[in-house]
Picture 1 (cartoon, rainbow, N blue to C red):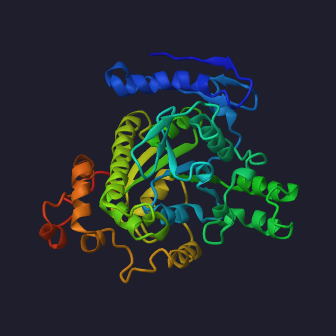
Picture 2 (cartoon, rainbow, N blue to C red):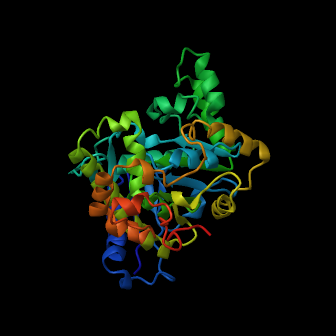
Length: 394
């Protein structure tokens, strides 16, 4: 299969041309993988939005950065992504934008090419590409961040980007500037600081919770520096965390609401795992599925393996100390640090039964045991992991 494309675009919003070609590509490999020789045929689209055209032949020329990595950390609410994001993004050599897609999509996520779906209820709506919440606009935003085109994007930052708990060190000059300029994040000097620090960083990173893997994977075609890390978690751990987080638990007051939320969790996990398996055949060195239960921490050889995958240097001890302090609130309610299976003693059995109903195939795919009774669930001599996590990094 040979696909070439060179078409004039009048504005960045006209991503539909790209989606036509990339959509055909993903449709073919999704429905008939045998139609493509993964070792010989690759689709590469370079999106020159500033120059106003799409060119499939000049992928590398679009980048003038030194060797480094653009990173998208893809995850779910209450999946452990804050700690992993801080571990990877709170470094002097990384420009880290925390959840840029949170703006306009607080309780929604993007699925496939034209669907906007609810996070807590199993419902989706088709939206046009001109909608501010569309995939086209989301990818345009992510592409601008990874290219440090931030002057017209600063206004899309949210309160979390200015929170001391969430704002990464790479935003510090910008934050200090806004503080002395009446809180104006659009002050020209403040904007210039943000762009300068983005360009100076060896790596650029965003965390995204409101878009699914096959949707965001379109950026891989035109960005040779981009790598995607997709963080999976046991759905029982996710729902347990959500039920114990006050701002999320407000939506989970009834069994029906909890069941709906679980259904959405496992629909997304299922869809993303399937997409990940396909993408790994095309981009084996640029897409990584990992599991929260693998136990990433500052001293783990597994995080070292993740740094290696991302072409990021091992951090200095001072970074490890900063992360330890940073994670103190993350582990505030735990007496023994990392424990991915607290749900075994905390989650009501009827909720576990709901997970069994909606997520049996997902748990099996991830190498996780499905408990058949409350006695099995509470008996911690019975391991959650069968023999090995499916997506362990080691």
